[in-house]
Image (tube, rainbow, N blue to C red; front, side):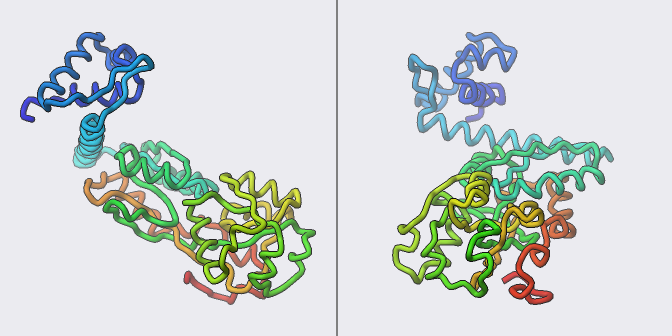
Length: 319
């Protein structure tokens, strides 16, 4: 391992990213034989093949995945070192890769814009994806910091809550349920319900809500994996849906959707900033975490402006 070099590790990253030695070489500004040599030296060092060479490109083997994880971790540490050195020099620039689950994309741009008004030379690369994609990005060190409603448990992370995340049931404004109060679960299940895909945080919360009702979500339900598609379907009168209140704030205020008055709702969760525990946070990440803890909640839509007045107690806090 003493002969391991950054150039070798970056060759593995580039081949994984582009699929061929030729494409990787162009990215690294090296010749294809030079990249081939880097991989050969690594494979001789470890005594294992790192890639399968196939007609459609090169694919990581198990040992290759292990090397890639180490390479990504080292790149992250080196980038953090650069940010720390800049901070020591008194510079104000730096960068961060921020991943947000799709539900958070409705407020994340406002957060970033406000943060950058205070730190105009900071570069933030925003990545939006479903829960599994964002967790995979954090796990593989491709993301530095993430915003999500339910932190992962299969690898060590630091998670800090920064705001209330209410989940509600919605319908078209002219739906019969929009005029009812204290709607029970059985009444909801008499309607076509549009739900998120398995594994999403919203789906998990809905499954918990209906835990006392056997096979509740196996009844008249339609599965969709996009909040935007769900909203359009509800506005078209195709059914009711369970969704984050933050994704429907605009449509509710414009009178295009209605939040239903359901017994035991809204379900109040939390938004978290999540990072890995096995890597040091850069000065940029620490500044952004501090910004979120102090001001993050102010960028979230206020529930009492959206929900039927009789259902939200004044000063009600997160549950």
